[in-house]
Structures are given as structure tokens and as C-alpha cells.
Length: 587
Image 1 (cartoon, rainbow, N blue to C red):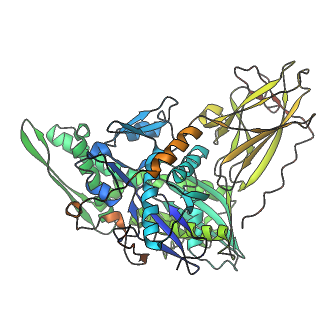
Image 2: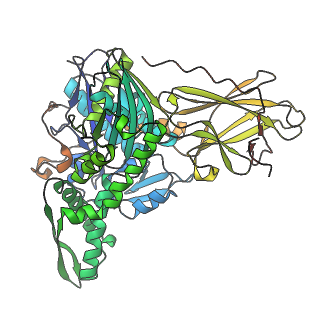
Image 3: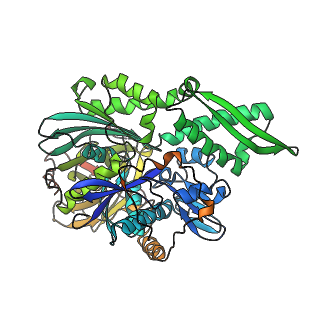
């Protein structure tokens, strides 16, 4: 029986998604309508103008490549001009376009859909299955995101939840949620590392556990490194060999590319247990009217050599997280593995070698994040009272200063929620307004960081340069989302700054999508179309609840007190307002 005030925990994954809830105080995975503990994060819009999600969508992908969307998480909250997006565009069969403000849109037939809406359709399917299982309406959810997601990606994920009909109680980091699922003895002071390599992202988080407190010390990661990249490595190997053997580039053939994508994913999974696999795709294409078959053998040693650079790439975030936590591998009590890619022997060996200890794998890596999110939902609802989670912001937050440099206000790995302030002063006589560029990242060069948006402060009293001081306050809430305020120090005038987002859905667009989602029907493929063979990624049925056939946090830390010394300098000309950092040389 569900605990009172039922709220679910959702791992909205790149490849697969999973949902759990508290059942008698214990986290329990809820299986989908097909009886599996995970649902493929795949959405399809068919020729019959219907929506399919999960296995139904995946099963028809070969015959409907342009209308089937997978790995949408790699695009949520990103811009069409991002280098990673431009690379991935060439490897997916569906069309990716840019909106007027540079956001990503997916073309499905005559429709343009945002990544938020595609993600919302996956969440709608999850919501539908949960309500069928529990026999009640469920609207509250904790949704997880990669720890290294920036503000735009977090807000976009929260918007997806709202479109799907959820009240998103909290956005929490995936590795932190996984740590909750492991049920450590927190009466002992322990330090653990979470190595989370999933379908599209990598996160490494260092936590300290004591008396029910899960405190994140540091986190690092890569939001564009995961199982999809290992699939693509196999695909590229096959594509190059086939082109060399037959003079045909299969990249130009969407149906062939989709068949190869599925074969590459299966080969990757099989190589975790088998010494070699055969990749056989008969009648993959034609050349001058003659059918061509694709058949290659891939051994595990060759595969591991092929992806060695990807595996080694996961170690730099491990090193950085340990440095930021002021720890060494020998200071850790445990290392837990999360994400489907951690089943790969090469990955496990690499983690074992780096941390000098045997990784902990006692919780299913596909379910750990959702189970932990369910526990966090219980903490918020008051159903769990013996645990408290304190997370951190993964990236520094600040503003652009004169000369194009990045002035940090909130450093990375600061515990959230948090609020920090800095003083700025005007540099022009009679300056009455300020417009500041808000950034998130680690580069000292402003343009190398993610632009979150702009905030404006108007109504400053005309005065000589330097006479007016403005206290700018940045706050990060428990979801990791940024808020900005400003105050005129002399007059006490305070203005709540609304960040003018440079990406994401507008308020009107979000409301329109919420209303449109209420009328959306997610169809079920006819039984004749369903494959009897369980897909590799569906996960085990054991331990998951079947679906019936019918359809308190820590207070904010004290606000930092603005320094009584020199204030940084704020300039403004209503065209390009910049800040001048007094620590930087005059330009």
C-alpha cells in the first residue's frame, strides 16, 4: 500500500526511465504496462497521427525512423549551435532544427516539438502506468537530473514535468539519489564516491554520511558522455568498414542507420558478458539493384580498444571531484556504481584501478536513482524522518565583467540552497540603470561559459560615477535553479530580478503545452506488432511492482555580508552593460 501523500521518484534517463515510490516505508520500483522495471525513453509519432512511448515506440523505429525520437535528454536545455548538438544531429534519423531564439526543435511530420514536450510525453506514459498500478491519481514527483546539468537543463526538465501533469517537488542530482538508495549505515562517519555512467551522461559525486545526513562534498561530470557514445563508436566502426568494403555510405539511409543503431546497442550490451558478437543485418541496402548484406564479427578486446578513450575520459571528472573535496581515493570508504554502462567489465576494471577498491554493486544500477528519488520524495512529504540530503551546485555562477572576464559570485560545489552577494558600483556619471549578463561555468573567459540570461536594475538615482553601490544577490534554490535580486545600498531600494532566459519555453508557451498535453492520448501498439523477445534495456521484472491491465531540508545558510572594502564596478549604457572587477587591471 502506498504511503500517505503519495509522491513518486522518477529517473528520466537518456536510454531508459524508471519510477519508484514508498511502499510501507520502503522504496519500490513500479513496473510499466509491459511488466518491466524500466521504460525505454523513446517516443514515436506514427503515420496514423498517434503517439507511442517506450517499447511500442522502439519496436517500430526501423519502419518509422523519421518519426521516432530517442536520447532526447542529450538535447534538453541546449542550443542548436552547441558543438555536441551539431555532432549528434548527424547520427540520429529524426530531423533537428533551431527555433527563432536558437532552441532545439524536433520535426515530426508537420509538427515541431521541443525537447521538453518530447520528455513530457515520456513522463505522461510513466504517470499513466503509475496511476494504473496504484489505483489513484498521482501528481507529486521528485525528478532526477545529471549532477552536471546547468540551470537551463534543470529548468527544462522541471518544465517537462509540469507539461506531463506533475507537480515537481524537487529536482535532485542522480548520483546523490543513488546514494540514498544504498541504505548505508549513516551512524558511522563515511565518505563515498558515486560513479554514474548512464546512457548519455557521466556524474561523479563525493559524499559524506553521518547521523542520517547525506552531505555532498563535490561533484563533477560530463553531460555528453554515456552509453550513446559507446553505441556510436560501434556504429562508426561498422559504417567505415561497410563503406570500405562496398563503397556505400549508410549514413545517407535513415532506415539502414536505425537498424545499425539498434544492432550496435545490442552488441554493446552483449559484449559485457560475451567474448565476441556477430553483427548481422541482411539486405541492409542495395547497390546498382543488388542487395547487400552487412556481417561483421566484433571481439571484446577490439571493442575495448575502440572505446578506450571514452572510458579513460571518465577519470578526469573523478580526479576533479576528489580535488574539490580535498580527498584521495584512499580516504573513501566505498565506491558505488550507477547506470547501465557500469556493467561493462572495462568500466568496472577502470573504476577499481582508479579508486583502489572493489566497486559496490548491490543495487540494480538501472533502478538505484529512481529508488533514491522516491526516498527523497518521502523526506519532503515527511514519510522519511531519518535522512537529510544536502546537495551542491555543480558549476560556478557569476557575471560578465569589463574585458570579457567571468566574475564568480557563487563558486562550484557550494551547498544548496544558498544565497551570496557582492557589491558593485557605477562608473559613469548620472548612470540610472544596469543590465548584467548571468553566466554559469568554470572558464575565466565569459564567452566560454553558459549564458543563463540577463537581469536588469533600473531606477538608480543620478549621481557621480562610483557614488551608487548596488548589492547583487544570487540565490540557488533546492532544485538548483537560479534567482537574482539587487539592492541599492544607499536607499535600500530592492528589486526582485527576473532572469530573462535566453533559452527554454516562455510562460505562455509552457501553459499552452500543459493544456495540449491534457488532451493527448498515448496509444498502445496492436499485440501483433509487439515483439516476443524482451529488449536488452527493458531490465528485469523481478522486484518491480506489476501494472494492472487497466489503464525537511536544511535552512538557507546566512546571507553573506557584502564586504566593507572596495566594491566591484558596475557600468551601464543601455546597450552593453558590463561590470568592472577591481582586481582586474584597467583596460
